Length: 468
Image (cartoon, rainbow, N blue to C red; front, top):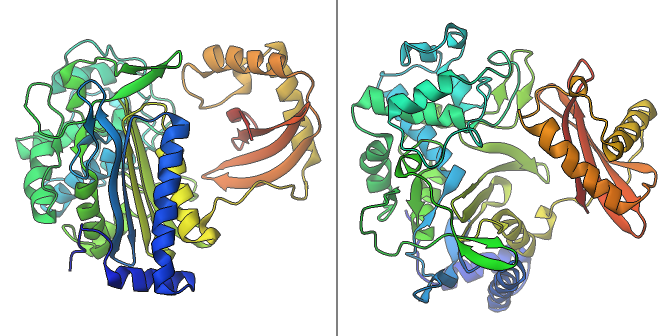
């Protein structure tokens, strides 16, 4: 049965009282604390508008809008307000593709050259599965395509043909909007319609997602929110892009929080698609080495507190979004925002912690450092960054812009911080074939988080430095 989208029921209050070990009457205070937390985060982050949905054990415990959907017209956010989903829409593109797999029109093992016969010969090893799991090696078009130009499907494909491959298919994971643009075109070609129309007929309508739809610049769309960005401390309208960039499979959909609560029930019940398809969607990608990476088909597939956690986020044109499912706790949280600098995932994580403190992101703390040679090397890398002496040969599989743009950025950060204290190891993990190391580093009275990763041959594949 589908849960009510109305205010919290007495039954839900009772259930949540059991979950927290508190009397049912006290659970209204938890809902109030969630509400107060969201309001405080909205104010702290300066977000014009938010829509939030919280589901626990199959019951909607909170669905609410906060702030303004449109500042110019002073329209408040409601539960029917439509937000752009950004990359959260990738799970729907994956669903559209899996509907074609179930219909026998597409196979996950097909070379994508079957659907793009004029593609470069180097694309022949790339399969549909590789596109779905971001393991294709296709370079991300983000930052390379002309956002003011209109493109047909053929134009998009021909542009992508010009981008070099970053690595052989299946070697590693690298998030690529290019792959999902191609998946949208693939679905358009095999259905002789558009992937958005497929979703409308076969997903949105049967799921009861009454207002979910593709983005359109020319349609009159009730309850459409405006997107915003912060510039110099002042809220500005979203940047303009050509209408064709809002038709692609990497994230070109509108949803209300009520639409996504309806989708939550589909996911929870493994509806619309077969159980076998859902297993494919929610299984981690397997690399050529046999290692796995925690991403399925349009979903992160990770763990929290030893239990499965499935999630995705999105950001595009002044909108940001987050959808997290904590399966062991039967808790799902949706946050939609209309500010590009908003942190909806952080808000979702904060709500989860209020519901169950065990779901909090574990704080970083010192752990035994069994590889002092790695720590010494990364201390040297930190000083090379400060000196501006990055050598491109030191890096592997980083984005095309990384050395030229991230190097000077981090150099400026470090020069402003002063001398670094000792590197204190706080986390070590493996993702795919890469080893990630996170350290706590003191700069004067401030503690920063320093993360770097190595590929098997020892080159650096990731570098970041953030205030802790």
